[in-house]
Length: 95
Image (cartoon, rainbow, N blue to C red; front, side, top):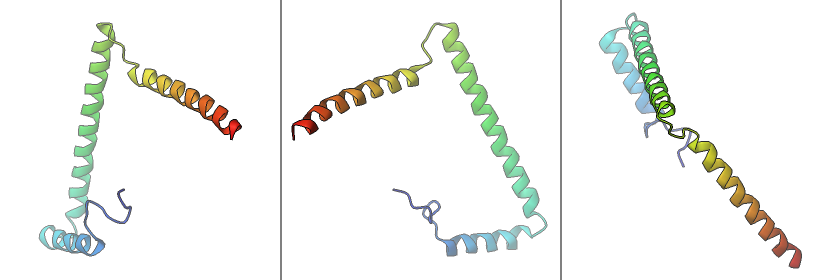
């Protein structure tokens, strides 16, 4: 399981050194601009992936492909859980 204290297997000291190097290379006045640019880039990637998902879903619905696969799987899992609980309930009563 991934621990919350590690980020990409980098410790706090290593992150501090990386931040120090970034400040030395770019300067403190350029860091907000760099962060803003990275934020905009991440937003554009997120919007592009959402557009791709929407187009795939729209195309699938247009061609009659079932897009509720996750719901079908969840319903089947719930049926199996109910069957197991019903079976284990009778076993528990016997003991």
